[in-house]
Image: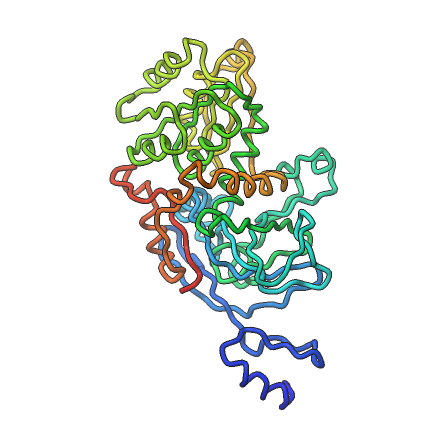
Amino acid sequence: MIPAPVLSRLALLGNEHTLYDPDHDELREASMKGRVAVLPAYGGKFELREYQVPDPEPGAILVKLTRAGVCGSDLHIWRGEMKEIYGSPPRDLTFGHEMCGRVERLGAGVSVDSTGQPLREGDRVTFLYFFPCGRCPVCLRDEMGSCPRKARANRVAGTAPYFNNAYGDYYYLRPGGFIFHIPDEVSDDVATPANCALAQVLYGLTRAGLRQGDTAVIQGAGGLGLNAVAVARDMGADRIIVLDRVASRLELARAFGADHALSLADLTTPERRIQAVMDLTGGFGADVVADFVGYPDVVPEGLKMLRGGGCYLEVGSIAPGNVFSYDATALVRGNARLVATSNYSPWALAQALAFLRRNRARFPFERLVSHVFPLAQISDAFQEADWMQRDGAGLRISRAALSMAT
């Protein structure tokens, strides 16, 4: 029971969220709840459910989310293309991983972010949405993105601490999570994809060994691909070639620094696309070819766009069953390197935020998130962002985001 003097103070607080009394540290919010978007059926509408907002345990951080992104992988989940992982039918699925917000509460012992900067309530932050163990032989080689023990938050709604994913009012960052300040110069809309698309491609292109003067081919000009164009340009690529079927995406790729934007509507066969890349590279092929499409048919043609000794970077394929066939002897004779990345090491997110601050006037980041929907309209956001329903025709959203303010 809350003592009468505390109740009187609660009445005076009005719309304030937090009830704090130094004489009663054990007291929590009397009725502080938050929304979580839940998907009961694949391809269907989301439901908003309320759960009690937890106090952070020692070492944990409670973040009040301001933005969440609709990533291509989230569309895969929503469409039911990952039933092998999440079940059929889904069990009250809650998901989403691109997000940013403000520190609502710090657990005991937390005073700095992952770079050692002071961390206070109200600070704007973003963070890793997965949890490498930090102790295994893989992590100790600075390959935390490949950690075999890395964990993800529970995706079954109603599982404590309830706020485990991006599509809700809060996020509970468990102890040991990596968290970083968002630079003042970087808006929430621009920062939202940083902890997925931008950090992922920065990490992937680094692992692929992209160097100054290289030629890079980017397969797919969605959120990942457009970030990859900017990162490749910043890393010193001399020539960047982008392939996509959507005219608006190709136009945006040019704005982000693509030298050549090739339309699949014009180059209708893999052979024509491969030849186009060869023509643009003097017949040698590209130093790095990267798949950000996520469908297996693009892999064989991308491999044929490589120069001898080049590297093929696979990032887009996350749904089970993406199988392709290729002649292994051609890989050997071409001295090809294959690199695949899932997630990233924490340093990549810190560098992604620095990249955004450094290049805020160089690339049109604000155009990446073209539409912002309130959380209450999350079903509309997914319907509008789903390019599969239109086969790419008439696509008007480059990337959708959700605002938790309303």
